[in-house]
Length: 241
Image (cartoon, rainbow, N blue to C red; front, top):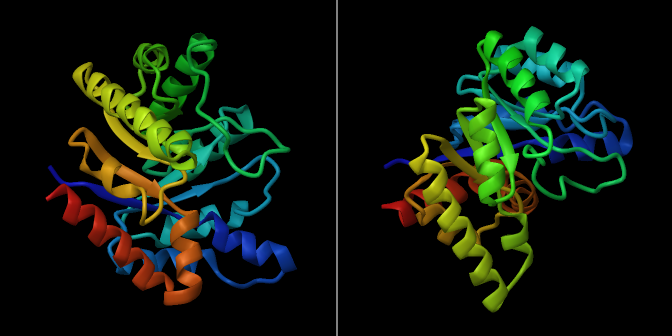
């Protein structure tokens, strides 16, 4: 089974916003990623607009030749934006203003009614909905109840640990990927993945797509974004084969 790479371009915009300039261009970066093997482009339009801006989403929706995966909080504002822009995919994520990056999965189990309504609204806009969740059975079951066809398992805890603790986390992800697949969900994964820790996750046959951003953009500082994208995609394809 093939495995796909979604490249998150948020941190191209982070560099731009650090100086308030009009460069580097997230659009240019996204197109180079597509040219170099990315199967989709992920971008997170945060409520605080700390990196990606509304104009980035609008421009990219017109120019991408693969597909857009719009990460967003499940707020009325973001649902309206997604309904207007109509990205091919949308990943619902938790969001706190004080966080450096998304710190954990969405707690779907505690808000099934609300999340079901959001999934219905986005589906009516012909957007494929993914829920970014921790690798926990109750969250996977809740995602299924909400009618989301796709989940993205949060790999941040796996990425942040080492040794026996990392192996334990990997086994949890492996078991939950198998379970989610068995109940009919498409399983994606992402967060904190690098050239050093991606192989084991990419080998899991139930994983359809990995969304990776920070490590690719960081690597691009040294070898360029095209080479950094190709390097990650080649690793994923090689270990899956």
